[in-house]
Each structure stands twice: as C-alpha cells, then as structure tokens.
Amino acid sequence: MLRSLAMLSFLLSALCLPAWPASAQADPAPLIAAQKQGLAALAYLDGEWRGAAWYRDQTGKRYDMIHTERVGQMLDGAIKVIEGRSYGGGDFDPFNAFAIISFDGSRKAYGMRSYAMGRVGDFPLTLTEDGFTWTIPAGPKAVIRYTAVIKNGEWRETGDYVAEGQNAVPFFEMTLKRLGPSSWPDAGAVGPQ
Image (tube, rainbow, N blue to C red; front, side, top):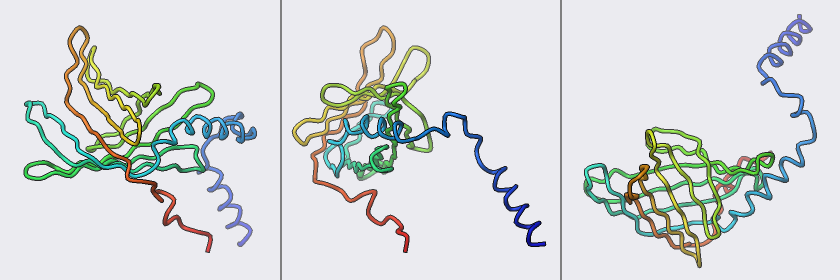
C-alpha cells in the first residue's frame, strides 16, 4: 500500500512538472551570469525615490501628485523589480504599479513586464546613454513612449502619446530625487529556520 502511494505520488509529481527543453538541462551558470551582467547596467536605479509628478487624462484635465519608486534586485541580481506609487488629493485615484525588468543574454535584449491599473503587459526596454525608454502599443500606428533620464540622483521620466505623422503629445512627467538605498525586496525574506 505504501509503495503504491509512493509510486502514485511520484507519477503525479512528474506530470505536474513543466516540460523542459533539452537546452534547459545544460549548466545554467552562463545564462545567469549574462542576466546579472545585463542588469548591472541598471544598478543606479536601486533605492528609494520621491518627487513631484503630473499626468493629463483624455479630457486634458491635469492631476498633480507626489510619486515614489522603490527599486531593488531579486534572484541575486538576475532581475530588477520596481514599485511605483502616486499620492494625490481630491478626485485623484492613487496609482500603484509593479514591474520586472530582465535581460535575455541570448538575444542581448531587455524587457519589462508591467502590472498597472488592472492591466499586464510585456514591453521592450532600450537603454540609453543616461537612462532608458520603453513603449506600449496604442492602436494602429501609435505608441505610448516613456523616456527616463537619470543623472546626479534625479530620475526624470516623461510619457508621450506618439501617433504616426503627428507631434508627440505629453501626458505624464515625474521628477524624483533619490532618497537613499532600500532594503526592499530583500528585507523580510523567509529564511530556512
């Protein structure tokens, strides 16, 4: 009976495992090293940030707010995690977003998975000399483009709606100051004991 239960448990476990390609059985160390090396280029983001921000809704109404970001690494530096929060008054709904930035060493490409306002998406992220850009498709021949410039402890990011053949329409801007390092997300991790 015990032997039958053990065999059944083993078979169920095997069926629940994902199907790994043959290449996944190779030594993962070079892949992990490439991820860490790629993400090291964004180490300057790590920490806590706060400052002023604004956005315009589709009617053109402007909302001013205080915006914060906290950035840290996980998987020993193989991914970067970011949480953004905006605080305002009156008829402003607080904003909260979460993103994971990764680097694919085989394609030499950065990507960001973003969660915000009930939506989730995967977007290409391109490093620039002093920051990064990322875009979200916004219909045929249009994108939402975010451009971040980080210099001297200041993170300035703008958001523009860009339709083919038209001038970019700004709808978001934040200017944050680096407050200092953060123990997030490492603090509070569950230990072995």
